[in-house]
Length: 145
Image: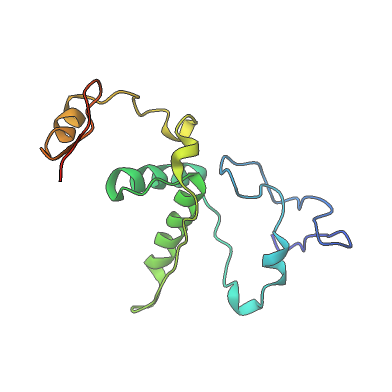
């Protein structure tokens, strides 16, 4: 927003900048710039990328479905920003996106609300496709070496 965050003497924000709005990305601050970012040298902060909530959720779901990475909405938002950054980065650039959260705590939230608790036929077929390792509901696990 270009408006510096007003801070108390010991560092916490004294109030919210007018440009911030509530969002569904758990773990991200909805109403202030963290002091660690304010204090960072200018060369560490090239730009702030606004993250559309729907894109963060969709990317978190895609990470789980396509890459096997179970992360929260903030992880989805972080990866979305990295992917958007990659679109305009010079060839040979290295982009680091840290996804420090696990999605386990979000399984009962709107993030995964459209995923059924029980396996469907296709998922059961996949679960039984490896004879030496099977976790099939209602049956003893097969954990053979």
